[in-house]
Length: 315
Image (tube, rainbow, N blue to C red; front, side, top):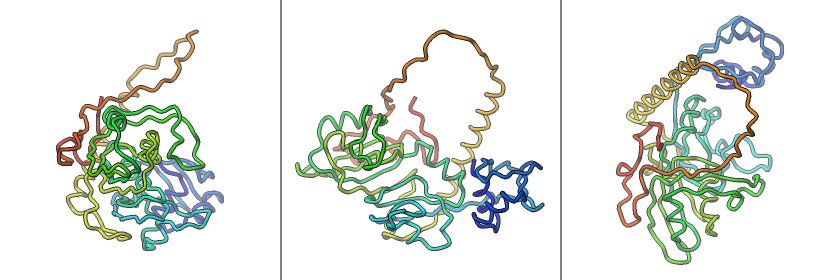
């Protein structure tokens, strides 16, 4: 799903501002009915949108690029404080590309961007493996190892968060894998693989143990590797990577259709109850595959609970 004004700007020659004006002036119809709200959500795969009598036909083709983000760039279109963003470095042809997740200002490494919102959404909400190399202050403690293997539940995850972030609970799933590459007391270097992309997730995780993450670099996402791509440079996906991605998207779409079909079949039952709603609790998510001990080689295919571009399932 995407906003109507964004849909028009993405699949036509209209700019976002021109799309807003056309919608407000009554030139846009959805399924034959005039729509004057630019924020109306439409499904880009099935939407019947017409502007001034011309139907907008989404192009099923999409592009994904790999950007080696340097430190000191924000993953946003514009920063109120005037700080540099990735779009200040990227070529103009990528101005409308959507980032798949975020890397914070002080982080670097692989960032995927795409010109299709459905692709970005599918990747961001997947349990695909994200591999990072991190440097923390202090040693790797036994508590860290246990939490990386079993998951972690925090009532207050404000440590390690952005200074303006809301304090509150946070749940960390078990890591897919970890490897301690250096442990010299005053600092440690780890290679970790996780299946989530929560806000400043690794910084918050290690901050809980009093360890500051001083360096963070993403090496891969869903099997797409950074390899030797220079900092600040861009590359397109290879043919084999596109093939895997299309296979993944087809599987996601098929699963969504099955879900919708089952929901239509399921009878709706409405029952009155005097019982009070259960209090929300946090339950640890046990991983099927325990992280590898740090003395073994870090080989992604040996422990990863899903293939490239397939949804993880740790139930």
